[in-house]
Length: 131
Image 1 (cartoon, rainbow, N blue to C red):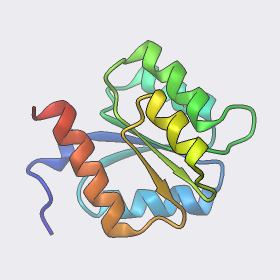
Image 2: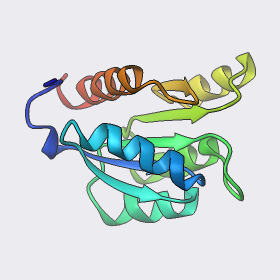
Image 3: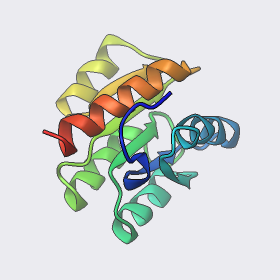
């Protein structure tokens, strides 16, 4: 299923403290040809964003030490336009409001549906890089 041309151009950081979830998300996006970097924490995600050309951040909301929102706020200081998709097992109206205030592109519930994730990734990349 070809979602967009030349997916190898795009690098995605997947930040989640749950290794199985992180690898599951990686498998979904790599099957479509996207390059991925894995981070087990918000701090690791920040290091990757500083060191490599990254086009999208997929970040778990609830991680030890630094939440997804805190990670997003710090990432914005490095790359103000980087789109971010937050994922969470516990979505509330409050979390959605906080995510939108932080300019997250979307909030997806865990377990993440493959088609919903891919659709959201493509929309986020298209909005920022193909506008």
